[in-house]
Amino acid sequence: MMQNRLRWGLAALIIVAADLIAYHESGGALRVWMRNYGHDVMLPAFLYFLQRSNTPAYVNRERFMIAYIVCGCAAFEFAQLFGLYRGTFDPIDFIAYAVGIAAAVFLDRAIRKSGKPAGTSG
Image 1 (cartoon, rainbow, N blue to C red):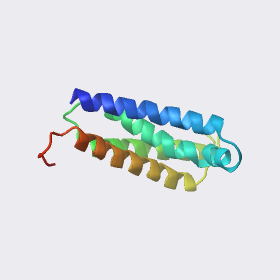
Image 2 (image 1 turned 135 degrees about the vertical axis):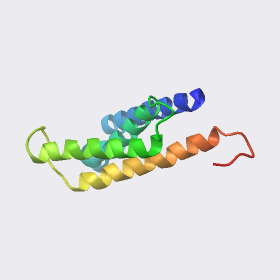
Image 3 (image 1 turned 90 degrees about the horizontal axis):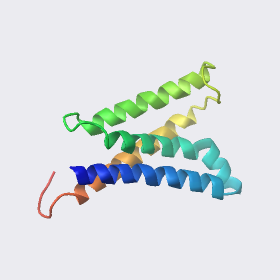
């Protein structure tokens, strides 16, 4: 279990590093995409793994994390819509959030599967 927590924490750090590097080192269309949607894909994935590494074992982590991140991202986006947070409301951001969460869940399942001994299932 501790090994997976370390993997989840490492995944969160890698996502943040990739986000920052892609944004600051890219140019042209990639930089525009990163500014508009890249962060919206990477932030939910980062939050998923950060929280995954800190959530108690008794919580159904996957469903809890998905609900937690969806609610957080939606709240952030609607705060922009109503002028409570600086930024521009963009409904396409919801698609980017979903892509980030789906990628995180897919990677999470791969991490958990890689941590199981050979011949085990589930």
